[in-house]
Length: 175
Image 1: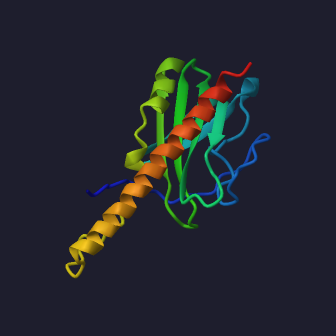
Image 2 (image 1 turned 135 degrees about the vertical axis):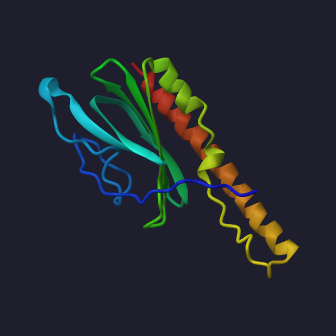
Image 3 (image 1 turned 180 degrees about the vertical axis):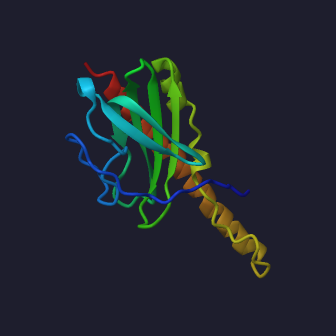
């Protein structure tokens, strides 16, 4: 099984507000362009395989699944736009410096649809295959080891995403 993902290099963003990022390489979840009239902030969110999404509004919730020793983790953010809509963002981050990230971003008219975006995300697609299938010298046993390793990485990504999603949704419903 080969998994093909679109990757973009992780860029540096300026921090804003009181947000303290978990990763020293990634100072913030979005590229804020500064406050607008009425206290709203202008955001520009990167999207893998698409143009960035720009809007003004405020961030309602954020949760990072970064943990010590994790090769990959997810960061979830939900924004309310000044136009009355919502923007959901799922970032896939890697622990290796220089490793590309993935940016799943979508805009919605209703919060329920934005939450469904988070709930239906399939984290299996966030794991890239590093099996050298073009190497004719690999024995079937070596290919099986590579496949088993990939299977474990996929299971870890799914489990990690479920944990992050659970914490994110629980934090959103606190009074």
